[in-house]
Length: 301
Image (cartoon, rainbow, N blue to C red; front, side, top):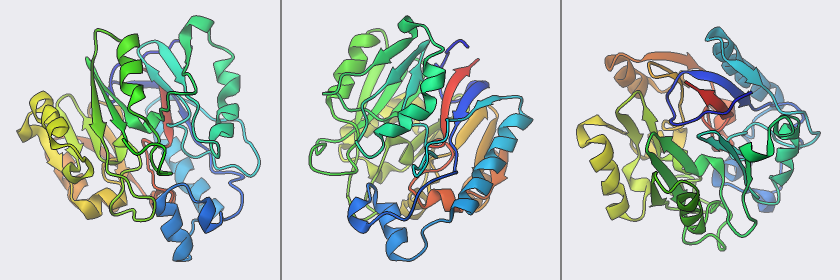
């Protein structure tokens, strides 16, 4: 299977979609690696496995409807394998294999069967001293946006270090690689951006969904204005960020998968002539991610 990813919106040919089976028990508070999961444990609203399976299989059905080839991770008992986005990512014709946080690193074993089918030159193993998770990498043709944190070693929610920016620049010297410093908080999901795709998402050919207050350095955000144009920004507020409104998923330039409850955003997208496939993804969202987090795109055209 050939790899080809140059943006977030081209027609999707193949993808690895996460699974909800065998997630294991409810973590202890001190074991939580993101503030939204922590909040749902404290509120006794931690999602049930059966509900997560139901939601993600509805997402699967939509992808199949559009003739997408859908691969799934091999099941690993007692391990949450919903969010395939972070364990690997494709840029161009290369798949990057990062050394992610210890509590999630075993998730990569679930896609080993696929990685083993690829040629050596198609795979780039990221050095252990350079931390990157796929949710912090957003590709927009000649631009690569990287969400990073200056507090990498201090916070659980800091998943991508500033070293990632130079690393990606060296591999893609002709791309415009832009670092975007994210606001982080281990305990408050209203004040924390877990990954870049929790604060922004390109859609169509020119629009950008964005939560402007998720970035700590405004001069970096201004580059997004220059690239997309302010009139093409679809701004979301703090509540919408918390709910996951930027974590949508494009099947093609005109078709977007969104949550049924995102009424304001969905109406806006439809007013811009997008076809919005709406499904309920509220239980998955309790882990701090939605549709983009659940997918590892392999090929778009």
